Length: 117
Image (cartoon, rainbow, N blue to C red):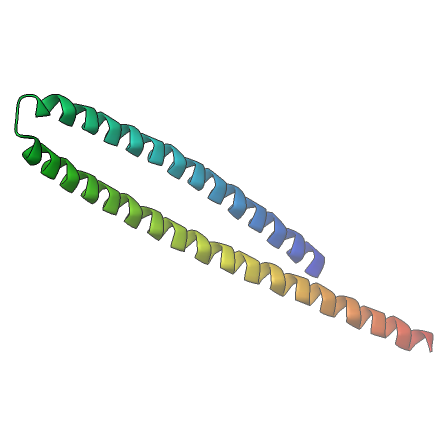
């Protein structure tokens, strides 16, 4: 039972790592989209500066970019914290299963050694 629990814990940990990898890949795609969005805004600002006051546009772009970046950082931080908690819980389950497996093995060994004497 302890061996099965250990295998299940390893499988669960592997699933969590796979899920984390998918989430991080999604974050990378979103980060790339954010960069493209910022580049597009920068191009719009450059075109608009020819017709309007540059300082007004730079202030607006700066505020939008700051807010967008702050929102993304908050979402990434929340996601990272959740993943850390999940990974810590899975690691604890795995360590508990391994400890139990070792305890069972020691008891079995002691029983065999006791029956041999």
